Image 1 (cartoon, one colour):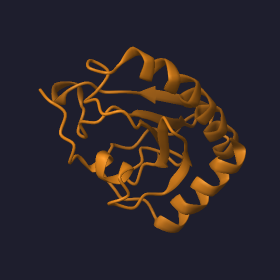
Image 2: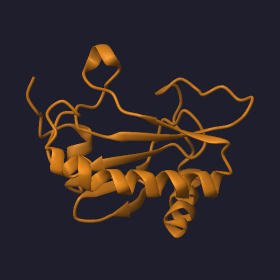
Image 3: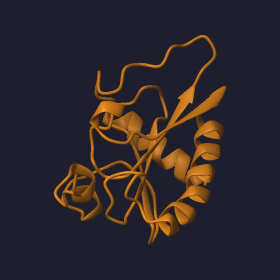
Image 4: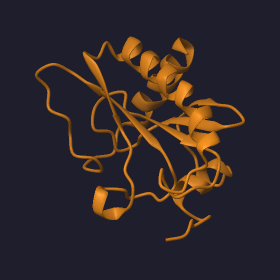
Length: 138
């Protein structure tokens, strides 16, 4: 499989589509997932063009993982989650639906099951506030 430069995350990275941005630097964009599995579900999206982990440049992975860790800590601090699930999918049979490398940071709360991904769009005002709060915690 090859990388499609017109995937939704590539369009967001190019500024062609909006997002609830938490953070951005030269290597990655962090944004809120608009179809979250729990309150505070964030995505870390490397800017380098790769379909997923299987074709990613190792230098991109090594540069983005400290950011993944920092965002996880900020998400947990803001949401008061009991834990954070890190998820990353590679190809459709594994659950990948957007074919641009990205990392899900999903807050987990004791006694509350995670929702199904893509099952419901979150409220934009709530996502905007979460993005602001997580950004401030970074």
